[in-house]
Image (cartoon, rainbow, N blue to C red):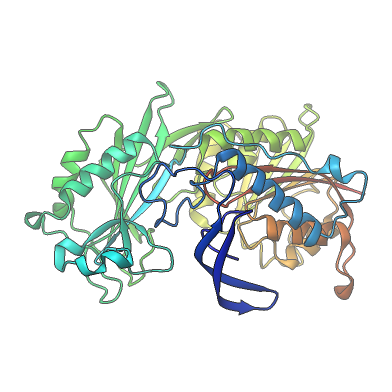
Length: 457
């Protein structure tokens, strides 16, 4: 595993860590560059950890991602490439038509130490000149790469970022970045979220300052500047008093405008608050949810029951609700469940029930609160599904199971359990993999989303 090495590139590397069946390598020198090497359009691409594949032609990026999923399904999922049906199961990756300005949420950090490349370390300055606002440099929790513009976020977001960068270091404002070593300082994060006005379709922007204490008078000069931008409709202050440096606060204050922004997805309007979960690429989420609906194969007579696991703010379940009998959604995060219920109410959806609970700790009576579902949708986070949940699903034996994954490695592992079982734990699989559709949600990054359809054998 080598950071910054492109698939097919030949290079000299130094092994920095060995663990089990893999090793980590630091790239030293390129011998033969990749055939599809291009010049990265972002000036920070070589140092930023955000989108590491900008210097690879986009068509080559999606080919590499498709190949990665293919190999994981064979080697981890234990599906045979020699099976005549395998070619029909593995679908070609769906690329993203928009490769820049696609992120509707960006989180920037304030720091007391600006990251500099080794050759510029002698130029380091002390105090305010060493302050930074940007993204954490890879491998450093205390050094921030100063960023003036990010090509992945909206133009309105970049306008706000530029204004904040232009003034926050002014000594007369009395602002200081939070120091992760001494646990002192005021500014922790600048979070920018983009939505769209439901009536006009025009973009609307939420600006969220995460600070260590509530001192609105310190933020007022910046608030006055950025509130004049037409797209800015909400300015929020999340207060996080803990020594931790997370972007979620214990208290939230409205400094300007509305408490939330809106977005429309598959005909459903969602209210997005500062700490809500929402698909980061709205454009490609439309494609993703259409694929999920196609996999669901709904009858259209409103007779089916859907169980939506890891439902977040209810986005998937709510887009299906009007075509089914009832949706039951489960999610661990209380705020997400609250948002899901509000989203259902605001869209006039009464056949959706959202329940808060930890799906990694389900008990024997899990399932007593809903009838046997016709369709199960599971959209876990990167670690995949807990064995308790897999056992439950194998016992439940729903006719169709749609597995939505943001990590093809854990997805392949879980597909193996669901389809082939686990002999040493006396677990028998009962599903057949009918289709696996990779989709590129995040161009220029290594992340891959997959939509898998399983049917009961």
